[in-house]
Image (tube, rainbow, N blue to C red; front, side):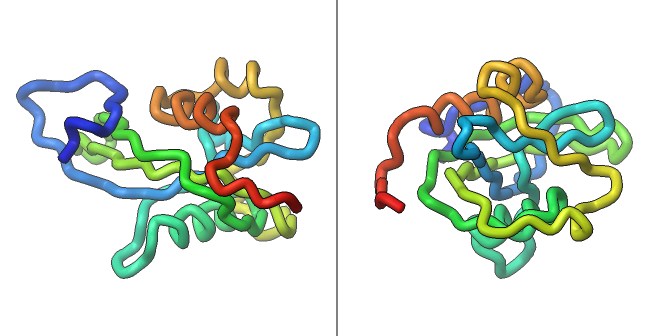
Length: 153
């Protein structure tokens, strides 16, 4: 049921969209800075596509490790939003069903990061301006609210 899921991106009424679920992390450091991944000149929240048999949380954790070289712990769920994209190189329209999670870094190992990805830390304002996808800007704004399951650490 996509009616209750916020949708971002331009909808092509003649395109057939392939559903691609994935998990993404919003990580804020103690200084308030937000972790972003830069690749190909664009900025994203760390995360990516869900593998068969994998939970969305596990996808977010795995993809964040692969892209950034950081291990994270999921704190809570922020929500789900769809991002409509046209992957020109593949000739496919995707409906990325993005599940967003508030997370914290538990270990950093930059040597594990994919070479074409660069981890950056930005203020929330700069992160909002740099993020390419509307769904990711939406999630970052939602992350500013207190955690639903706030357990003091």
